[in-house]
Length: 338
Ligand code: DAH
Image 1 (cartoon, rainbow, N blue to C red):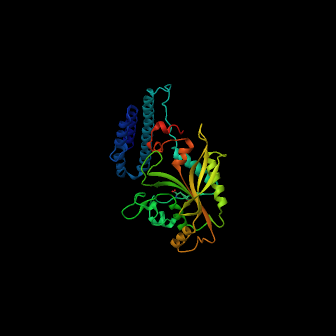
Image 2: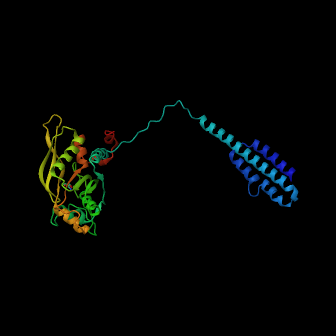
Image 3: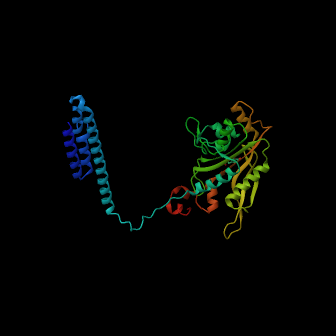
């Protein structure tokens, strides 16, 4: 037995020394150490040798197995080093590097990032809701009567089951108040859809940013201060901001917000940029009814809401003349917003 092990050891070591490729080495390993390998077969005969010889034979067997395993490992490493060195032979490290074209945030994402950063500092947190909505969340709960033109099939994408693609992100106001009691202070950026003819100022799929703050004693002064702060953080500290009375079904009083922009070479003019107002008590009533409680009691709490279109914001900020540029993905256009 001992002599046989010695012979196996010697054969293995000299065979390994001559190995020239990694696949051959693996085949060799199997032929010695595999289930039917030479050493394994020899080890199986251990049970036939006299009892007193067993300890010495066992020890020798282990030594030979370890020696062969170690030799295969070392050979494998040196073969791999040779392979790597050969592969690197053809690499010229003095060649100039390949030019990378790093991407950039889309202008809509950039403006959203700015607005969200400011609003987060003011204590707003992000909320979201589904783009496929019920009529109730999109219109009824927002105090929009059945005969309102926005509900018309010609303005809104309806599904056959009566659901619709939300026409504004104001739906998230309702979704948030349905599930959370006051105070709430949320912003909801997201897609909105209208059956508009697509032209230089309209897309049928666009993005809005909705805001809602409800608590005890929220005032119109806070609405005004918060939105002035937000708009000036986007358009510049000195930008004139004005609130013009308007009508929205879901707020009372309601306003449109204009900012004064200096058009190069031309007279400055007021540009409409957002809608806002104090949450209408009927919105709170609808929410309470859905919740089955009086958490949003109109005589105890109040709130303000606002909504703005992100495409419009970007167009005004960067002087983009055609809204369609924002969805065409023309790299020459997008490169202008690094
Ligand atoms: N939902 C309005 C729109 O799509 C924007 C808006 C106006 C949102 C006034 C509001 C608001 O929250 O108070 O035109």
